[in-house]
Length: 221
Image 1: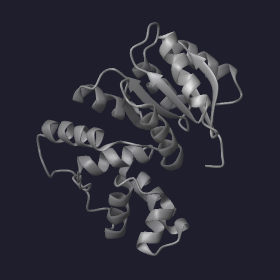
Image 2 (image 1 turned 30 degrees about the vertical axis):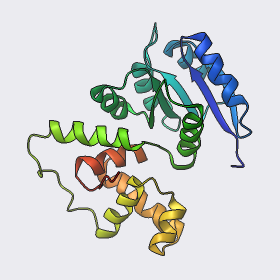
Image 3 (image 1 turned 180 degrees about the vertical axis):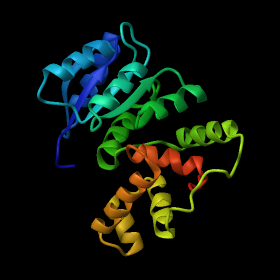
């Protein structure tokens, strides 16, 4: 990738954070612009720096202000910044909660360096990245909590919009969707913006959750 991805790292475990920093700095297209040891320090850095990160890789369990609360604040104040949750928690309810508060990717701390770098690049390229396990967790959590199955309205989406939404859920880029459907990227962008407005989703990750919630997305192994 030609453009440099600006990253902020937030973790109270200094050794772990420095290890990730060292790992990422070796990538030509990634630049660490600052580090923080808790959510409060992160918010302070964001307020005091003109240069903002594209992506924040953030631990969830931290003193002073934890990653969940920090994510809520960032989503409101800095909606363009993408948050990758990095945590040792992998319970279904925890994953579902983080997705709902605004994390666009979810990684467990025992993930491989290769997976971390891949996730950062995918988030930079597409705005989100959920692997099959996370998508399945969202599906399981939503379906098990639905009392009235099938009472959600999807009739206001056109067949073309549904088609594009399904391809978004398959993690395809705008260009890939345009090629597959023989449309221009601009037309795909227009449909995507309509989907965001119609579903009242704040970002692409929200669209994916909406699609799963309304059983538009078909998960395949």
